[in-house]
Amino acid sequence: MNDKWNGEARGCADVMFSRIQILVRKQKTKGEYGNLYDAVLSLVTHCEENDKRLTDILEEVYLQLKEE
Image (cartoon, rainbow, N blue to C red; front, side, top):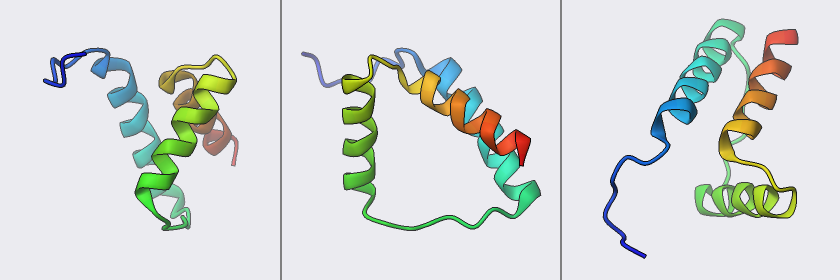
């Protein structure tokens, strides 16, 4: 595995992440600040165990925030 970042699959995830940020700002959503390392590992593990991609998770979060 080459560890050099080549920008693979950035587009969709970046767009969804930006949309979530906009909703969070507009709704003044309170978040929890925890250990970022553990949070990322948890996200990766969830995706692996549920056969999902990052964009799937971001889309689910976006749609939930949009309904609030």
